[in-house]
Image 1 (cartoon, rainbow, N blue to C red):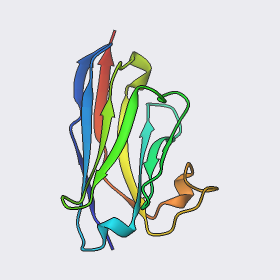
Image 2 (cartoon, rainbow, N blue to C red; image 1 turned 45 degrees about the vertical axis):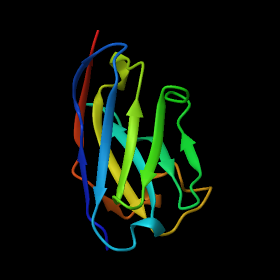
Image 3 (tube, rainbow, N blue to C red; image 1 turned 180 degrees about the vertical axis):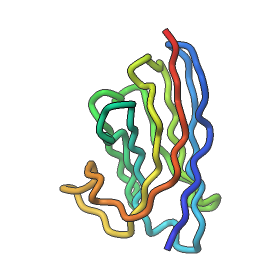
Length: 125
């Protein structure tokens, strides 16, 4: 099992940057694929980015070129660097993990069995 704790959210002006962190417990962190999802009020939870064990990286089209996902297996932490933030990036951001990984499920909520509690990101215009 793995437990996930997100941090780094906050209020930022449009065009600004934030770095989210997802700290994981457990000795086998390096064997997990990790993803970030987000959910705005009234919207479904949507895929943002993912990083596999390899590590390969995957991004939603809406954040490609602005967000970067990375992992530090020594610190058991995954980061989401968010640059050029837009008001439409406002949401609760969730970290998710799973030991199984597949190209068909990397962007799906159903592909992850472990979730953090979320961290709020608010981008003002």
